[in-house]
Length: 224
Image (cartoon, rainbow, N blue to C red; front, side):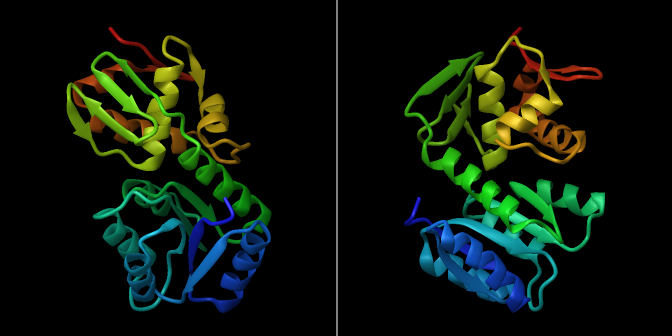
């Protein structure tokens, strides 16, 4: 992953340097932007940025607007940083297609671990296509179609659906889903899973009924 390029967006130079230092040690190329407008310009100029680490509160253009703009053209993984830990902020981030959400202060080592986990999954996807119940998943192309029609899923929604399909018929606890789909010991709560499942079901239309809720435990993917 040495050649992968990461864009770090934060109006605090000290924060950018901290994140850059930890990522550089791991061999990543790191680009910096000090405000939202600069971030958008850099993203469209470079065209090969593998992941964005994006602060929320910034001058000229905040993180939400940056994410909204980029999501119109790209599903590049986005990790959102914020000094506020309010639930509505987290939910807004997921609705905009944010893949990870980290509240400040955070451990740089944990941040790097999340970056590596996301990039590992997005770049080492198996070259295979699986199909069940009219749902076709192309892991290599990172694409999903339902009854022949393409479905626009975020990175995390794609990973979640793939995990469900690969474990169909099995009762999956929220903890197990978090640890496998997020690929590390996630110190969060069930809202993360429930928010993603709700949006995934919505995008799947009638096929969303394949994702069954197991009250008090988690979910099960089962084709009727």
